[in-house]
Image 1: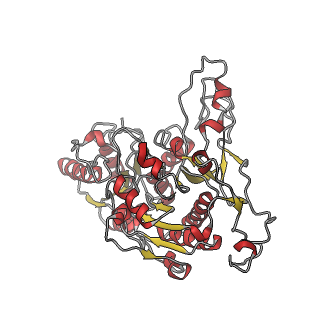
Image 2 (image 1 turned 90 degrees about the vertical axis):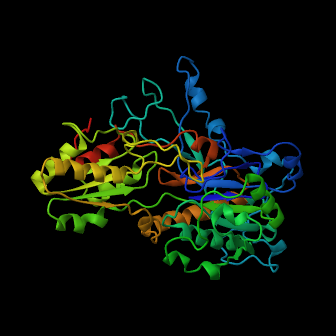
Image 3 (image 1 turned 120 degrees about the horizontal axis):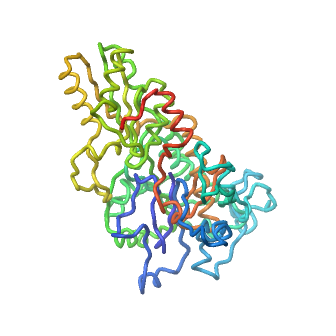
Length: 482
């Protein structure tokens, strides 16, 4: 959920959790500067990062060395560093140290802490195991096999955290924070922790850019940020900086960064939390033959709908993009709804926004991010459900709720608050460590840095053969709707 960028980056990209999208370039997943403009701007360090998960790549299993090549995590999971572009950059002792609990000041040697032997740093060679289950057969539940024989292959990613050496002098840092795309719980938590961690490093110049990339338009004032300003913002939902989709061209954004002398830019966004189905629990059960339909976020994957259904315990049908379904017919959703009304007198349907798009007429319209505007599957199911029960002369009180912004704008819960806190802290640690083009995320309970190119290589989707989806089906009791 957190991105970090610095002035005139050679590579700028956005989180894979899509609410915060860099202005699109046709056919490209990232931006590279070329020619004289790039050369003119290679006068100071640049940093970029974000949050989310990693995928795999196609391999030729006929090649006897395929495993060795696949294990080459140094190539596949290499995270860009400032020294790749600026070989002459020299690191300096880190200004981040919790041992002394002292602020950076001129009273210290050269303005930096004296306790450089603090054992709280992460070594650049620390790795976290990406996959932890050794599946014995491809038919094991949730098996994630690389080759047909399900060979065990160790995959490693870079551990996140503060490094002993850094590449930015805190007194020279001009940091900016933006939030864009849709709202989600935790944005203020991340903003707060970025500001607090920057101040621990000794950064004095921190601003917020309002309304996402649109805030880079000339004349839009910045918001000065400090620990005092952000101290209590995590107690409220939304974002104190506001959000927006789209924005100026890439050139205009980079020009504004150059003009404002921004050399660290933190970009935040997220899809929201795992909740919603409980919102209709009381109303659905107070109506005769009540049917509640709740649409949750999830354009191309059903993780939110799946986890919300499991957490609720009240959902009877969960529909996600990864699993096709029919509404009509003997095995369709409507037939099962009829069964539920007859047997338990009520039903709750949870549907991800990207599910069942094949049942709707395509609009081909696109939003400000360049994403195709989806048809409203929730409204479609509501209308078809009403029509179905009218035709069979069975009374049904069908309610439809789209709680997107009721969910997005609330305060983060305890676990999300901790997640956002650590994401924000590690985003700053990655910036000062000199890494660029990276994503901050969780891998097997550890916070790690992923290369953005690997993260965006393919969308993360629910595996219909996974144990988690099987748990959801067990909870809902739904059949296959094909």
